[in-house]
Length: 148
Ligand SMILES: [Zn+2]
Image 1 (cartoon, rainbow, N blue to C red):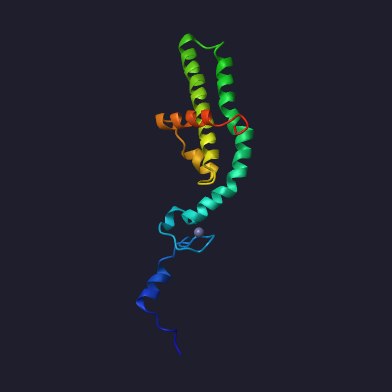
Image 2 (spheres, protein in one colour):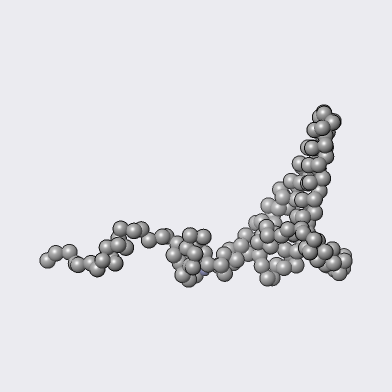
């Protein structure tokens, strides 16, 4: 009695390793783009929702301070730098202000949208362009102090 005969397809499958992530690791749904991750889009969103609390905690500790830390370091450096370098430092301070504004509007928008998409996802995708800026200021004007 010899080894069982294999069809050519089975032999090929033996030679070529099957990718480890052909199905979603959470729900088992077949993935359309197996090389883009190990979860289907729905489970990936669920995964992001599960990260939101940790993300907000990290943002509270580090993220919301980072712009201020950089701006204050530049402000202190202004004293010692040459006039040309002071311009760079002043631009960097202003840049931090703009980025802090982007973060605030992004976080506000992400919270408003939290039932439609994970906060982390909305925040990372947010860009303070003209349309988003107008929407943000309208939304801020439209909510009461207690809602804010
Ligand atoms: Zn899934």
